[in-house]
Length: 102
Image (cartoon, rainbow, N blue to C red):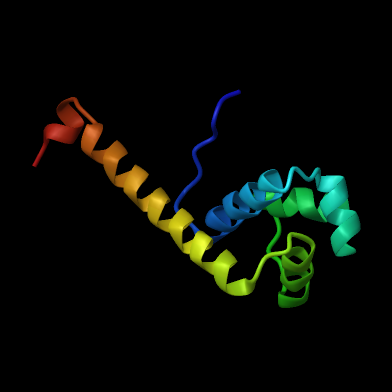
């Protein structure tokens, strides 16, 4: 399976963190949807970065995942920092005439 590179955004960090927590709990999108009272399609849109959750939806998701806002926020921050670190490494690894220009 190929990895799609997405830009450094809060939306991308959110989707990565949501997928991470759902995977840790070994939940399908269907199970998370049922436990949160949201639809599987909504969960899918969140995980693809095509939807942004409101506070009520976020609260329902975190309840279903047995997660606090603060710990989710910390992991969201880690995901943002990891994206930045990977982006900087990719830029530093570029070679060729374009990257060598000053």
